[in-house]
Amino acid sequence: MLAVIDRAFGRILADWERVVPEPGETRLAALGRVYVVGLTERRAELMVQLQAYAGAEDPEVAETLRHHLSRIYRYLVYQLRRDGHDRPEWEAAAFCGRGFLITASMAIGLESVLTPEEWAGICTKAGVCTIADAPVESPSPPGAA
Image 1 (cartoon, rainbow, N blue to C red):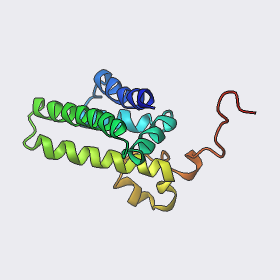
Image 2 (cartoon, rainbow, N blue to C red; image 1 turned 45 degrees about the horizontal axis):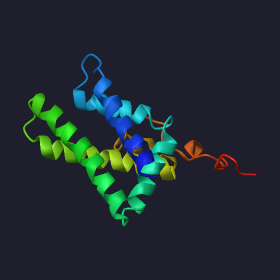
Image 3 (spheres, rainbow, N blue to C red; image 1 turned 90 degrees about the vertical axis):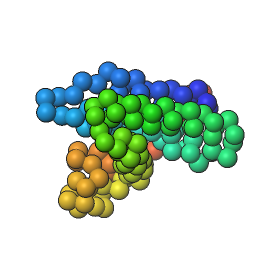
Image 4 (cartoon, rainbow, N blue to C red; image 1 turned 180 degrees about the horizontal axis):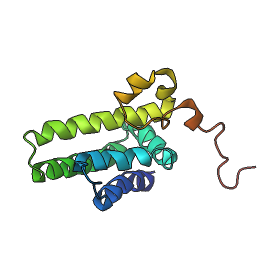
């Protein structure tokens, strides 16, 4: 399970390290854009993240999560400092909080019950966290009958 958690979190940073802001886009906005674009493609990985938090009573899982969240948070703080932001720690925390809300929204289809205006207050991309995004049935594990 720890390797799966490592892979799921590692892909976030790998994507962020490759992102190039579009003209007029801040670095933070570019990181958010890449994360949101990946929501539908990486639903299973994001569900692994949520399940890992639920399993954090296991000391190894908790340690793995601390490792990855601290890497993500520090990466954001570094980027914000580099770009001259006055309160990089606060902005990184706010960015992570919004990311958690978007991830939870994807898991439960929150966008399906919010108005477009309400959803726009959470995420600028429409149609990424709806009930329709949830799989109808779980695929069978390999070798299952």
